[in-house]
Amino acid sequence: MKISMIAAMAKNRVIGTGSGIPWDLPRDAYHFRTYTAGKFMLLGRKTFEEMEGWFTTQIPIVLTGKSDYKVENGHVADSVESGRDIAKEQGAPELVVSGGASVYEAALPLADQLVLTFVEEEIPGEVQFPDYEAEADWETLSELRLEADDENPYAMTFVILERCAQ
Image (cartoon, rainbow, N blue to C red):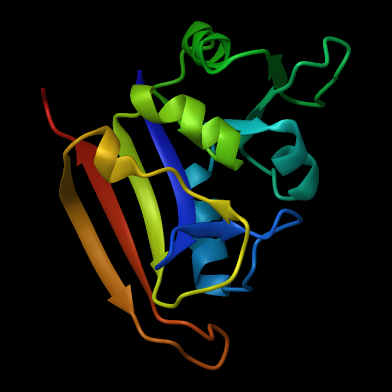
């Protein structure tokens, strides 16, 4: 089973403010929904609660230390490894890690693929995506740059990276 990580980050690797995403980019939201449609997603409890209403066809696996936590139409895990095992047991071909920062950090050593949106701007924020380039070498599988427009205030580049064999 493949483990992917999906995230949007600014040039300074900022992914959040501590209370959400610091931009409104409909193109990126569409990209996220399209890529994750029908897939198992691993995400932290706070991120899951911030994204309430986003899950239509996705199957969330929520990472939390709260043993009594319940997820309607989803699962609860206490580690990245147990989340991976749940997805595997369900026959998932891919598990998509969707944040927050501590979940990304814990999952990065296991990730086979990164599905990233690079927001072409330095944006203030306290929450950063981990330094994936220090973790491994990555090969670019695809890259698409889009200019800013009336609905998307920043240019962005969609990139899919695959971990190089070691």
